[in-house]
Image 1: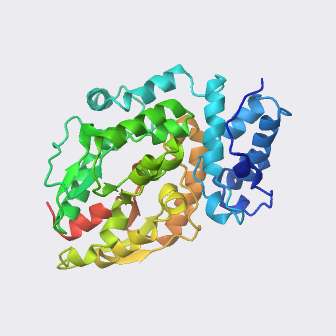
Image 2 (image 1 turned 90 degrees about the vertical axis):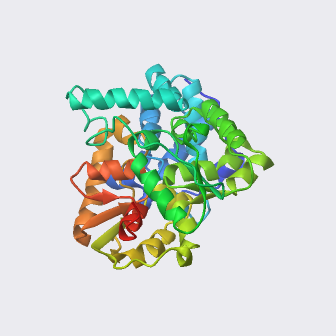
Length: 387
């Protein structure tokens, strides 16, 4: 089977196969297989584009096994936009019926229907209490919420993007982030069901048309020029990429309004109250890939945490992926587990009391190993005693 991929020719040609990406690719580090590396995957993309390689099981596995962490991008001297190439490849594979079967598409479709998602999540929580679902296998929180505290608006200085799955499973993080933002004096409007899904998971799965449809809905439903603050690294990366996804000046202007919650707070630290006493915690920062490699906004996490905890420590693995990758840990559990094992070893070497991670998927994936993992701004809210 051959496929037609809508590549940007310059982006595809930029890779010179130098191999400097290899140490930064988690799947290559685990497997040692070149077709599980950015260089090898781009080579296969070229052959697909030229029609010299069929879309066979080997090629499908190479593309499906990519976590899309994009750790290769900062390491690449040629600036290859690997994420864009992978998304175009997966979209073509979906059109060919090679990946993302109907049941996955159905699951992704619910993400844009917020009330349906919340209802379904509450039903899943009841089933979890009755031990009818394999929570660990599905990457679920240890105890899904049946009910959630209601969102409330305190003003319109900023939007707080609450998204889909995170709002269903980890709304307490949004509420803590909102309290910290409000402590600077800013009024916050949570997006709630106003803009329920950014389309990040759809893009990763190759569902380009649904991702673009959701992007247009989000842009329509969040008018104005207020900053759009995001406390999920994956959502933030997707929202900041609407200019590329839709290819319009309107989308690029919208993306310019998007800012990670840690970025925004780092610029407003002087407006926060001074903690009476920092939390007596040694905190290791685990950088979500889409914060570190895509948004390049990981350093503000340290600036925000530092005044509020006893000690902030770094991991010694140069920001390698933890293996979560949105839905990756569910779809590729064996590889995701092996990648996570390497991250867990780096965390253990740092000997922290708590791990701070600014992405819900990373948080859940790491917490499943027994670690105490918190969103960094939740720690700030605790230090400031913002109930």
